[in-house]
Image (tube, rainbow, N blue to C red; front, side, top):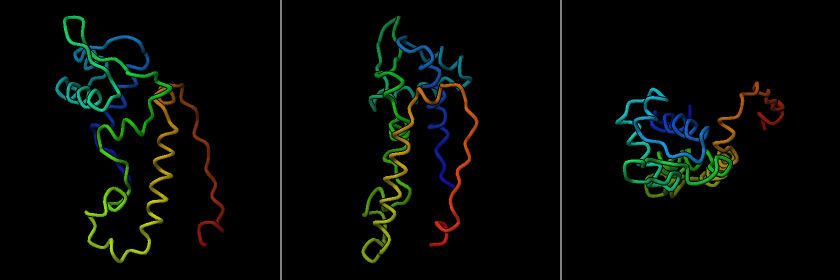
Length: 149
């Protein structure tokens, strides 16, 4: 199973809240109250998203955080990368240095292809897509002949 961290999950909740009121500055206390996520966790995530360029921050009594771009221009991939680092399904997709088998691996290029396609899929989904009304999932049909090539 491919699994994102709890912080990344919380980041999407936080950003979805902020995207519903785009153009407004949001304080950490307000975001914590609205999302039900603990204030220290919200503060940590807001700082990471700001450092990664997803949010802008403003100091002062009326300060807080705001989306740096429109929700239509913030990809899920950028949110994941801000909290998890580069999108990689295997160690060798992120760095050859971390895999002891890299020198003799004959499928590394295929993993890179798969990694690129997953990254492109995540790039194609935006924050605006996450806050859009939920549509029933469409069934994905993979022909049996493609499964056993």
